[in-house]
Image (cartoon, rainbow, N blue to C red; front, side, top):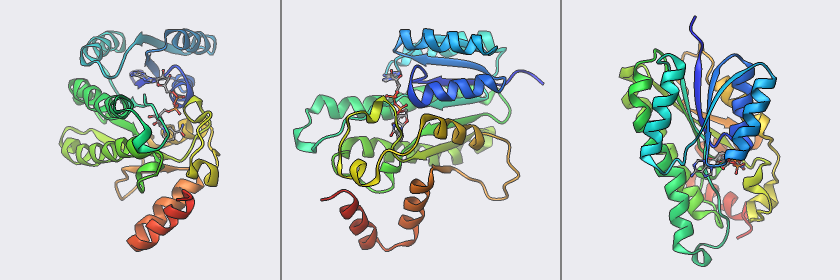
Length: 262
Ligand SMILES: NC(=O)c1ccc[n+]([C@@H]2O[C@H](COP(=O)([O-])OP(=O)(O)OC[C@H]3O[C@@H](n4cnc5c(N)ncnc54)[C@H](O)[C@@H]3O)[C@@H](O)[C@H]2O)c1
C-alpha cells in the first residue's frame, strides 16, 4: 500500500497544526503549509522527532500561483498521490458590522472563501488522479445561523458550506468526496480575546485536538450506508445543528437571539 498523503493549509498553529501532527503520527506524508514560517519550522521539528514525514512550505491561500507551485512540489514528494486536501487556513475578526473597516470584511472573505476556491481548483488534477481522494473544509457552527458580531466570518463559512455540498455532488463522478467540519468555538489563537454574545453564552469548550480527532475520524473509510457530508464537532455543535434542522425558523431565530444577547 503506498504512503497516504495529506495537504494541510494553516498548518503552523491551532487546528491545522494539531491535524498535521495527528496525520503524521498515523503514518501519512504530511504537506504542511502556512504564511508563518517560524511555526512551520517548529512543526517540522516536532513531526520529525516523532518519527513522521513532513514537507513544509510558505503558502498564502489567497495567492493562486503559490497554490500551483506548492501542489507541484508536494506531488513530486508524494509520488503523485493527494489523498486528502484540508482547507483549514482561516481568520476571524469579531465586532459590530458597521464598525469594521471594509478591508477587514474583504480579508475574511478572501482567505476563508477565495482561499478554499483557489486551492480546491488547483488541487483538482491531483485529487482526480488519486483513487478515493477527499477534500475537508473547515466550516463552523457560526454557519448554522448568522451570528451577530461575526457577520462576515459567519457568511464566509456559509459559503464554505455551499462549496462543500455542491462539489461533493459534482465531483462524485471523479471519486472525490468533499466534507465539512463544524466545530463551535475552539481554544486557539483565533478565539483569544474574542468576546461576543455567543462566545460568552456558549463558552470556548473545544481543543484543537478535539477537531483534529474529528477530521481524522471523518476521513476514515466508512461502512455508512448514507453518505455524510457534514461533521459537527462537539456536543454543542451537534445540538445546535440538530435543533436548527427540526425547529421552525422563528424558534431558531429566537434561540440565536438569546444566545447572542441581542
Ligand atoms: N477556533 C475556532 O473557534 C474555530 C471554530 C470553527 C472553525 N474554525 C476554523 O478552523 C480553521 C483553523 O482555525 P484555528 O482556530 O486553528 O485558527 P488559528 O488562528 O489558530 O490558526 C490559523 C492558521 O492559519 C494561518 N493563516 C492565516 N492566514 C493565512 C493565509 N492567508 N494563508 C495561509 N495560512 C494562513 C495562520 O498563520 C495560522 O497558522 C479556520 O478555518 C477557522 O475558521 C475555528
